[in-house]
Length: 366
Image (cartoon, rainbow, N blue to C red; front, side):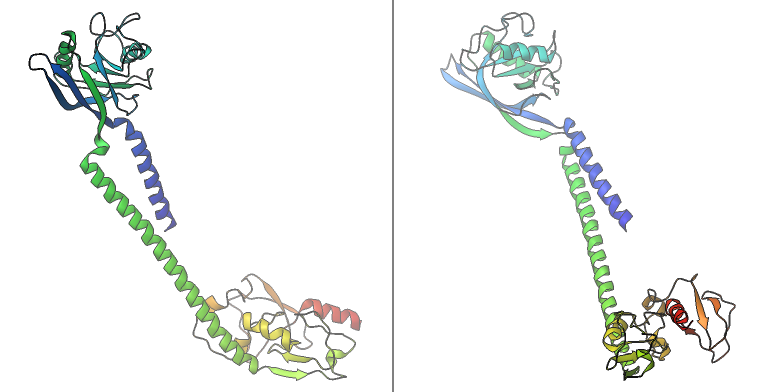
């Protein structure tokens, strides 16, 4: 499941990268509004068209000014001055024809003389076709391209001495990623990826919550069974002269304190003794002897419905561990717990003894 989440995240990253990389294919149109005075009717004539395309390095901003043609020719190339205007004149917009020099050179010439914007119209034979101009050397000034037919008409008016004012404004975006079908595709893909991610995390959270609740129920059931088993263990009070208070000075393996008269002790099924107040919390949590790992539930014959392998995984020693067995006064034997061929006689029981305590006891007796 983690691999699936990783794939979803990778898909989102690649998708966002494709969107960023495809930004270069998106272009913005320009809305043109031109107005001039008709000398015959003495009325104002306005024309509207969304027929311009912003250059790649052009800021997406509007501009207003009088259309101005170059002094010589129509290309706007050559040494300065190219226009009969400068920055001290009222706002003006350069209208130049494509050709003879690069777009950047045309735009730089107009900007250096104070133009508010540059309008480049296409060459003959292209009708009203436009292109996405590339002018990386001249950023920071509004630059658009219009079709040849529209540009020639504007140039004729200006050349005849008519003052033509142009207002540029940002139109709408276009390109493959702005197409309606692409938007539908991206929306659906984003929805499915988001839904899959949310579904996975909901499933994972529900699974973990179920496991936690199941574990709590199991622990509660085992504690209840352990409480019943603890009540079956032998409990007695140590008196003066008992072996626990003798010269051996036995200690409780839980609290590491010596036994003394008046202490209440619990005797486990394996024969090991502990303070009652020390061993009961341990048995509720572990259900095994702290010294030999003897399972008190199993020793007392208490049956539990849960999977024993799951319940006692932390209680059993590893399969390769060997233990030392003692049977009365017989010699010591090392018995591998994972030996499948080993069979014990019926009724034979092992007694597990802590080696450290046994060695300490033998040293003192010696």
